[in-house]
Structure formats: structure tokens, C-alpha cells
Picture 1: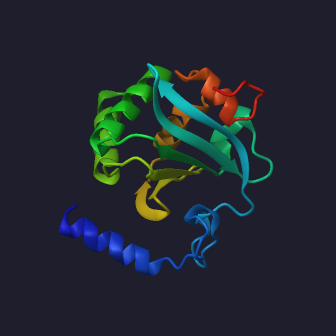
Picture 2: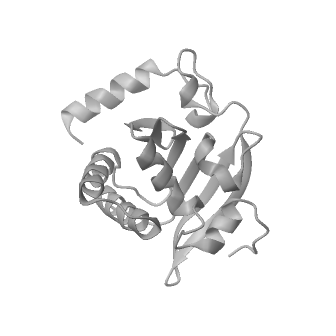
Picture 3: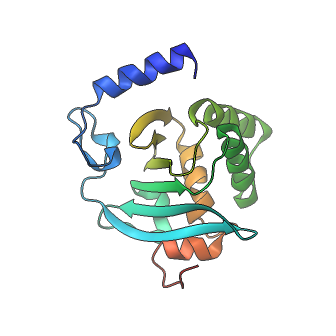
Length: 187
């Protein structure tokens, strides 16, 4: 981790008082209403397996009134609890590939978004959790093990990024059904 990034993360951690034991996405913080969900409930859970390898467990949490058909209009948290280790740059690259499979992404968007995610996403180890918060019309906010990583301030990115899991065009339709609580059988 670079010194600059370490200093930035340290200053952010000090500036954000969080309740002990509760995840950061679940804590309303004075002066920062966008950091948290107000009254989160678990919408659904699923496990991603690829070629027999368990990759991560996903949990979708949202406030009351969340609509699967209009997910992009709602604030929600999607937590990925990793079951294997991955490089942050590989997560970023795969995310852009998945976004392209859902709808067209220009070369400029793909490059910009992959660079932003590569700068933000650390390498993860088994047991690490990356939580993404969808802030509709504003940004995507990311946390690692309940510590703020930062935001990508692009509403189009946020909608498309979370579409990897929640769009009807996802490459993992059964996982989508489970996350959205649409009566799919567990994997």
C-alpha cells in the first residue's frame, strides 16, 4: 500500500466514528447520511461457485421498500465474503468484463472504471469482506472488513457495477434470484 493511500485511509478511519461491533454500512454517521442504511434487512444470500470452486458468499441488505425491478433507485449494501484469495487488480478486471456482458461499455469507460477499481480494491485473502454501497444517482462506496476504502463518484458506474449481481442480464441468474429473494433454490 502506498504511503499516500495509507495516510488517506488512516485519516478517513479517524474521521468516521463507528459503533463497535456493527458494520460500517449499518451505522448512521452524523454529517454523513450517505454512509449507511437507515434500517437494513437482509434481502437474500447466495454463494458463487465457478467450475466447482467456491469464490465468495454474497449478502444483499436494503432498507424497507427495496424493489428488485428498480434496484438502481434504491440504497443498498452488497457484501462479498471471500472464500479464496484474489488480487484487487483481477477483481477490477473481472468486474469490467462482467459489466460489458450486461450492456455496452465504451473503451473510455472501461479503462476509467478499471483504473478506479484497481486503485481502490486491495488484494483480498480468504475471510475478507468487501461491501459495496449503492448510493443512487451519486456513487458506489466500498469498504473492506468495515473500513472505508473510498467512493467511485459516477452514478452510471454504480448502476452497472451492482448490475453484475442484480441486473436481469447477469451471468449468474440463479445467484441474482437468491440475492433478490425471488424463491430460487440455494446453490
